[in-house]
Each structure stands twice: as C-alpha cells, then as structure tokens.
Length: 261
Image 1 (cartoon, rainbow, N blue to C red):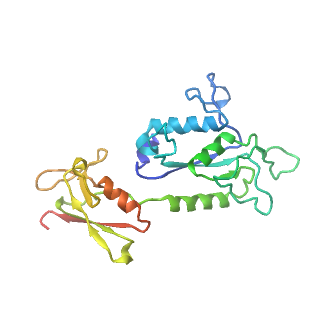
Image 2 (cartoon, rainbow, N blue to C red):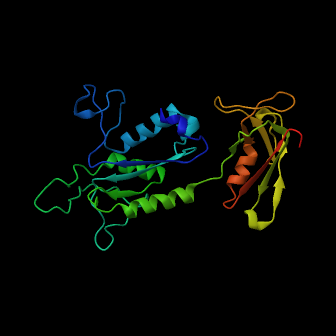
Image 3 (spheres, rainbow, N blue to C red):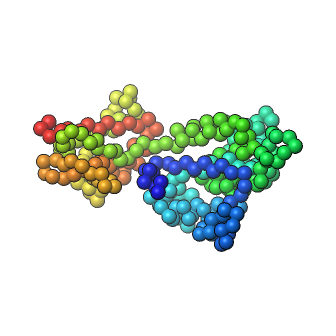
C-alpha cells in the first residue's frame, strides 16, 4: 500500500529497529514471515533480501544485476540492532559501512535486569547496512537515539538528488502547455548560468542532455491545451536527468503559461 507514496528517482531510506535477528519459518510461529525465504541472520540472508526487494520493484529500489549486485541500488538500510556499542568515549558513534560486523550482543543500562538487553547482534541487518552504505547503532542506547537519527538525516541530505520529474500545478483555468519553459540553473540560482531545455514530444524522442517532455503520471491528469492534450508532469529526458543530478547545486526553474498568455 505504501508504494504509492514513493518516487522512483528518490533514494530510499530504511531504518530497522530491533534487538533480535531476521528469520523466517514455514509455520509462521514466533511472528516470523511465512512467505519469504532465505532471510537468514548472515551475509547470504542480506543478499537474499536485497535481491528480493529489487526484483519486486526495480524502478523504486534499483534493478538487480546478478553480475554486479551493487550497480543500480537505490536504497540504504540503517540498523538499530542489538550489537555492542563502541567503547567509551565513542559509545554513541555509529558504526560505518567499512567497519567489521559486530558479533557481540549489547547490555542495557538497567543493571540487574535483562529487559533492555539485546537478544541478538543482528548480523543479517548489519550486512544489509554494509552492503547499502547505511550506518549501525546499538539498540541498547534506547534512552537517546539522537546520534543515529542525526547521522541518518545527514546521509539523506548527502544522498539526495534533484528530482527529474515535476508536478504540473492544478490551477483555475487551463495551462497553455505550449508556453511551458524549463530552465536548468547550473551551480544553483547564484551561479547565473541558466540553460533553457528543449521540449520533445515524448521519451522516445530524447537524444540529448538538454531536453524534456510533458506527460501524465498515475491518474491525475487534468486540464489541457488548445489542442486538447492533457498532462500533469514535466519529465527530464534521461541524459538531462543524469546531467543535472551530477551537479550538487543544481536547481530547476519551470514556468507555466495559461491559455491566452
């Protein structure tokens, strides 16, 4: 159900919070999934999840390539699991993707009780974080998750890319699609280097890095120009999308004209 809230071009972020390990069983006991398979608590389990997710929806999560599994991936997995935290004074510093898998289980701050202890170091989740470039953090530090959430937020900012499709606004009156103007501001609005993109009829007509086309997405197309065409999205052509997403300060400027203007 939540797939309709996702944008294909957007980098997806998962945050798994658990003190246990992944697992499946056919009987469905222990609240485990009965339909998935191979989600074991190890590197192979992480690889199985990665392949299953990306095969389920390649447009959203990146098409899976068995020859190069790391190519095309469009998501990150952050793990807040029952692993032991780093030694003081770095106990609230997240584990980076390049750091080794932690196999020891954390102990909570509630002395004399196991209520806030971890059940498993969650190696399967950790491998998934390593694979996708996500961070790992101890679930036993549950009195303060600020450090990991701030790190995730920073990762979202650093991983964000400019959109390559834009909603056409619904207005009182019809938009004159012949008067749509799309400009790419190279280096941002302060750089003073706008590039006007050229409209082409459709995606199949794209053949350069300065083109866009109008189209519809989902079922929300409204309005129309004098010729009766209805659109609700501006799409950058593939090469144009690649060009603007390679510019970390890129901005887009889209002007819409109404009928009679």
